[in-house]
Amino acid sequence: MSRRQVSSTRRFVDSGNFPFSGALHSKSRSSPILSIALVAVGAILLIGYAYSGSGKFRGEAVSRIEGDYTCSLEVQRAIPFLKKAYGDSMHKVLHVGPDTCSVVSKLLKEEDTEAWGVEPYDIEDVEESCKSLVGKGIVRVADIKYPLPYKPKSFSLVIVSDALDYLSPKYLNKTLLELARVASDGLIIFAGTPGHQKAKVAELSKFGRPAKMRSSSWWIRFFDQSSLKENETGVKKFEQATSKSSYLPACQVFHLNPYH
Image 1 (cartoon, rainbow, N blue to C red):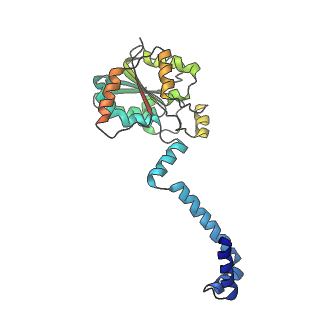
Image 2: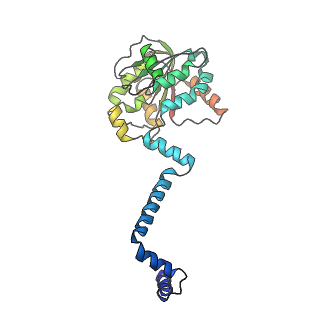
Image 3: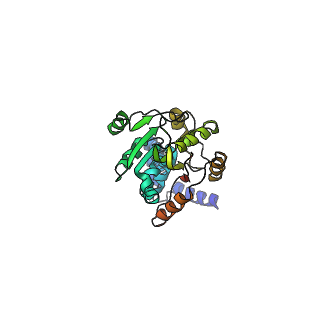
């Protein structure tokens, strides 16, 4: 059927009965570059449309491809619910993970909350506010594969985000126990979700290895092997706090008891 339609159109053009036949022949003879230009413009518009899409889709695409959305950002969203769940335990908090300056700054704005941070990787091109936190000793740059420079139970609550996703099992066990050692009331882990990989090039240049997004069942087995128990009270209160809102964590959240 398509061949008959093409041939019918051809007959109209060739016979001059097609209304725009003269214009088509005139343009094709006078400006062959115009067709190429139109094709190029069309291709650019199609590419732009594919990358933009609707507002929501565009945001999700940027987050997953460029790695803009992290679990450290998720911690900032969860702070009001963590405060409801843990109450007085939120008065002295240590955050460990990339972009810890932002998390610590957010925590310090909360009433009756002191906060410190450990940045596991070199801090580059940071804002003056972050440099100020580092200068005051509130935020430290430290390799978490080695013992933390804190005494046991130095903090009521330790919150970790993203950092553990970049550790191999070889270092993960020691690091987890070390994090639990410096907490008196609880350890909260925000881990990436399988399938939500970040940009490989950025990871390799900054962290030395791509993130390993592990399933919840993998983490639960690992916690059990490391003798770390779930903080059932923390889990229950956190679920109660979030159930009264539309909040849905974009990362996996684990509530653990301290290790002493």
